[in-house]
Amino acid sequence: MADLKTRYMGLTLSNPIIIGSSGFTTKPSTARQLEAAGAAALVMKSVFEEEIRHEQAEVYDSLAGYPHPEAEGYLLADYPSLVGAQKYLERLEAIKAAVKIPVFASINCVSSDNWMAYAKQLEAAGADGIELNIYDIAPAPGEDSNAVEAKQLEIIEQIKGYVSCPVAVKLAPFYSTLVSFARRAEDAGADALVLFNRFFQPDIDIDKMALVSGINFTQPQDIQLPLRWMAMLKPHLTCDLALTTGVHDAEGLIKALLAGANAVQIASTIYRNGMDSVGEILRGLEAWMESKGFESIAGFQGRLANPKDEQSFARVQYIKSFVGVE
Ligand SMILES: Cc1cc2nc3c(=O)[nH]c(=O)nc-3n(C[C@H](O)[C@H](O)[C@H](O)COP(=O)(O)O)c2cc1C
Image (cartoon, rainbow, N blue to C red; front, side, top):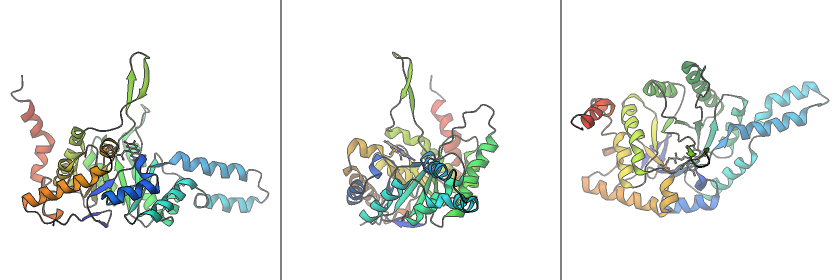
């Protein structure tokens, strides 16, 4: 039988399927079902920097007029570790108690701020790692790209200073120099990179002429964007890599592994096809490995990510696709 073990965030996972941050990763009962279905790890639904700050702000308010200003100073210096998004911590503890597989906490953040100490609480509550979902779409026309990237790197560096568990960064696909930024994220301490963050998808209702929420589920063909970047980034990085977006079946998982992923994170296929899809994908992977004679994932992982293929992923295929098409 094929060995499906893989390494991700410095941990050994029983197979490469991680349940991505989503509505399926908020409750102990579903976490247990997903583990039984074969998932090797899960990323909890994100807690938002704003939620953490909101609770901290309440502490600030309650301290207003505190009669001992010197003690207040100490309290404020320490407050992020005293409070936090309490419910999220409780949920994390409950999920950890319910399953044996690694559980990663996820923080949706835009700034490096004193909410960071909250990450330490997540670690203390049992998080096997922390995934940072840096939701920064830099909407201000005057924003400088170097400054935006420097802020993101500062977030990574700072959080690594707070926790000793591994930290993954779920990257956006929008950088003018993604390979360079990924290298700098790794230098800043990222133990893993996740390709890619999926931002809120807005749409327009033409009858109401109003902005509406678009469809957040992906299609199998959406894998092409992270697949290309996975193959292009892999030769330049030493940290672990996860691909998320468009893995709906065994074929998607195999493509991700061939491009260099250590693991994939899935969500849409669970919403569409149920939890049984985890087992189906794993059986498909095993059957493919058997048919190709691979005993372990290491036998083929990253096979299409060597530097000589880089040009194919960068431009050659593009030229081939369009030359001769009228
Ligand atoms: C309903 C839903 C909720 C999600 N919530 C989060 C979230 O809180 N944080 C996050 O980083 N990603 C979130 N995601 C993104 C998923 O983790 C995943 O990266 C994305 O859906 C792409 O994988 P897929 O093609 O398998 O759906 C969410 C996705 C869905 C469908």
